[in-house]
Length: 285
Image 1: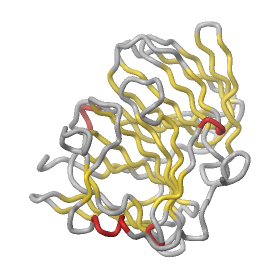
Image 2: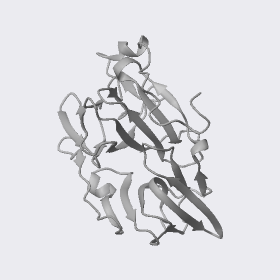
Image 3: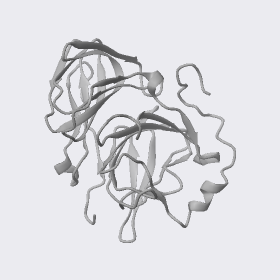
Image 4: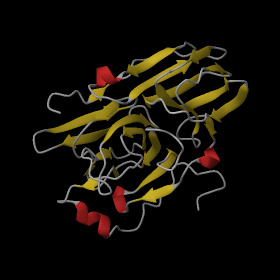
């Protein structure tokens, strides 16, 4: 998509205040499906919502809260930080009114996609989330599935990825912009970046035969990937986190590697011993 904006920056919400650090509608992003926002809730603050034509997954980035819907009441958290604990989240299908009340200051990722299917709300606990060490050498990273293809959602797919300082991620370069199952499916994708040290940075390349962009990404940045290959590398000394939000017409994450670099997947060296950066409940398998 020539001319599409790729990089979006968060604004700062003062500590102890409620507000949106980022709110990106499909129209703002120039695509059809994903609606992504990052919200801060001050301790004691409430947030209510209802989407009649969108499903949503709300991921707790930091804090502790109580969510209610249709007579159900659940505690979500605590999570001190994305680098200090596994994710807590809640999946809310279309036509589900909800209310959240923050017990302490909270940060939330609000991830949405079009849906009208009659599905069931679900709380997603740390023990429900996946664990995978992918790649090898300085292309090793940790994958934590939150809403994988087997999850009973409509379009949304979510995972968190941890990349140690100096490592490559989303590598070999891959794309998912063509509907050609089972080899590849057409997906929109959000990368929401955070760094253990807020001074951290990395580089995200997004390229096709017609366009080649290299973006410097910092704490709180979003990269919106509609088409093309898109590897990422984080600077030496700066551990990186990103939340991936994907949505398409199929519940699959099938992708195609850039054939010039696909050979690396066949013979990875030993995994980086720094991983896992975040230990799953019960310890790493």
